[in-house]
Image 1 (cartoon, helix red, strand yellow):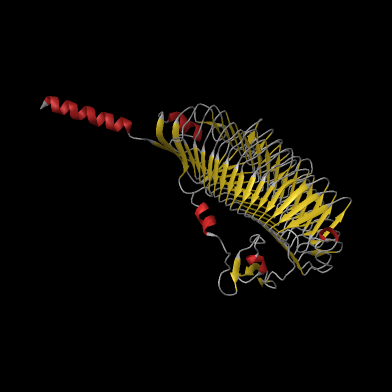
Image 2 (cartoon, helix red, strand yellow):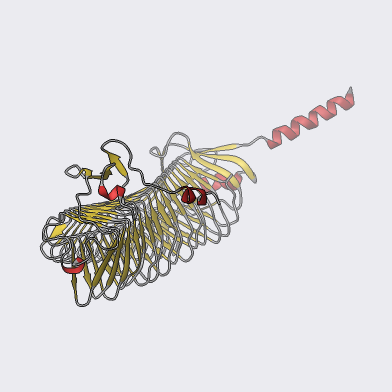
Length: 560
């Protein structure tokens, strides 16, 4: 019996000593210990909790708070609105520098008026420290270099959830958060009204592979680039279900919403809207060989005082953009929707590029000294002050395939497309319909370039002829229906090509041209042509589906 009692007593002592303790901190210093730092110092190695009562906490011990390698929890008793840590512009609020893990937690606190010299005005994590920061408000903090609200360095990868990071600033980069060689997991967080002198008003990622999901970036400002977000040096961060809106940056670089330099981020279901730059790339600015991808996203109503109202790519940057909307953007110079330059080979697929405007050329897409892949896009309602209402290609060598290009306007030539400067462009299975403008070539304009059109429809230009060539430009058509263009069909570039190489001049029988449905009737000559289906759109109305006569030998060959 005595042995059993000894074992039971030992068990109770072990259980008691391992039970997590807590310390209540009051703003007047009358709690269990006087300050938050005292609470952490009194805590065990991990698992203990420092409870912050309602009130405003100031002074030594309530700022410059160091977790000292302990995985403890610091949280408010009630909410962030009621528990406020005020750094009084004297020091940052928290520093974690001893490899703390996600078990170290900062929860439901307002961190205000912190000062980071040079990094991390609100919270500074370094040396692999990766705490959990949740339901906090971090506001009005400042860093003399980077990370006005939060700065992360040296592989520090915290989880940041359901926070509001607002009205913070930094002299250089990352007004809200700077992730330098660190990869945070940021979810359901708002970045609002943060500013920085150079890059990343809301967030700067440098060599980061972080995950950002369900976050809003709004009203952030950068002096140089990336009003909302800036990414540098092989950043491969993933952004999902985010909104980047009403952000802005200066003229030095650009990217009112996002700036991407030598990085490869993934953007999925991201809304980028109403951003502005005094430079290039109202929505996104890609440069320095960046790649990555954009899918299922909206890049709408952005503005650039330079080039690329929605998207700007240069210095070989070649991201892929798929199944996205690029709508209602404006550029003061070139490329209302997109300006793609300096050797980019970006892939633009299954996108709607609509209602964009620019003062010069390329209302929808301006491919200038670059050769992007344009496939299965719907390009309509764009306007250019000079050439190429829908698309302008300059020094371009590639194929534009299965694109529907309609109701675009150029003040000068090339309402649908304008091809320039020794370009070699192939238009394969495209429909160019109802485009126009103030000059020639309501459909296609070729200047000093070679254009080949195959299995396509060029119809109903509102003004100008189907094709206009100058300065040695040519357009050669095969298996193409050219019909109903205002100033003529087989004239100028297309003269002598009617009835040759499968070309025809018959009404393509669009299912609903006034309603911009450019599928063709099952009985359309463009669907029944011996040389193959013409245009970008399938049959979609008017009785039985069109068929083509095929020999038994051709059928058998499909299965060899």
